[in-house]
Image (cartoon, rainbow, N blue to C red; front, top):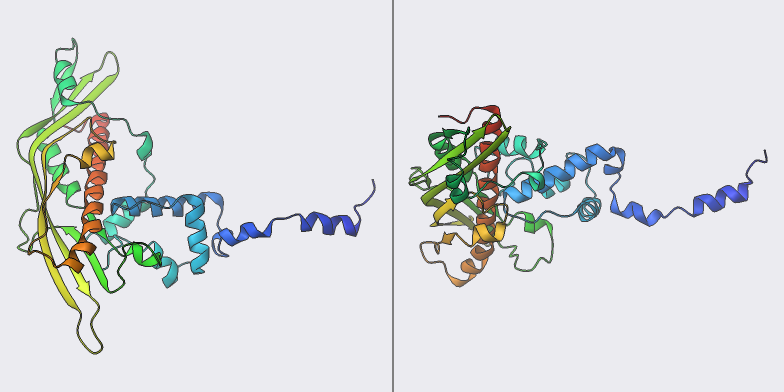
Length: 308
């Protein structure tokens, strides 16, 4: 067989589109496809936990290449920092990181929608079905998950020129109270599992009224030369008159049910402008963790552990 000429080899090499390498950093190019996808999946979960919109895979790769960091470098860590990703550290750093790197099965977009409470009530007369009251466990689990909600403007700091970002202010919002008392209240309601062993079917749903979440916002202003940073604390509540299954995963429908109070004390105009997107993301973060609660309810139901 005839060997390819040197000219032919040069022509073949010249056909490679080297511009595509601008979308991948040298460090990411050393990872196999599954490792790179795992890093991107972590990015997406961390952002959704903070109520932010994740970058699609190509934009995420391009952003990492633009930063030009190496594995473990400050630049790349700043884009997707370990843990909660806020300006300040909290006791939930390890818990957020463990959740971010875990591969959910099924994925969020494949997680079944829970049935609405009215439909579940109508099915309770289903012949042969067993009813399990999971209210006590569900109330505790819902309080735990909603207390993890948070938001920040730190991710915006990695996107120069982003509309609405003020580089002289750093803002974090957390679920909590200055007096460290209960920050998430869950009122009356119930959570029910309906299991039909003969037909191998399971339904679950919940409805709770009077859900109230208290938040604290820390706003730190860049100091003038030689001065100490100034921190302003604002508090408020997010109330949900009726939190129930059958709404999520429709994020818009969920957030429309929220009643978020204006922060106290009344912020001045510059602060109000910075707080508005933070509170919007906090609502989206609450939606994310409400869905995490639904995932846990389904998991416990399938494992037969939903009873108190």
